[in-house]
Length: 156
Picture 1 (tube, rainbow, N blue to C red):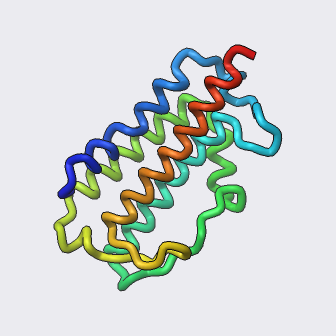
Picture 2 (picture 1 turned 45 degrees about the vertical axis):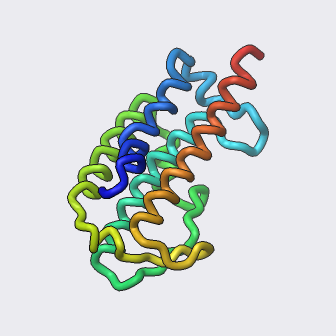
């Protein structure tokens, strides 16, 4: 990957989430602290499942000419439902393993491959570089959400 900052974030950003939840009991992590909003565990499950979606999209971009993707809605995804049922430690382990797969795949791509494009339903055509940035920003949004949940409700 050409950009060392992006590569660093891709390799390490998820670790921030692990720091946030360190020492929290599973009851707190699984509790839905805000009505109709995901628990910390559901946010973790979403990020793990979305990594699989991201990798599938990258694979398609590499073999198809500008594939178009629909909007991903986790609550309509039966695989997300399976992720939600896993133990928290298994969710994080699987996510760490999936991240290593993503990093290995992207590190092995040529600059020409990284310039291949896929069509996002709202953002239009994006290169793989753009999809990586989108992925990282999406993940950081969920890290921010977990940060708030941990700090707002830990002492209540």
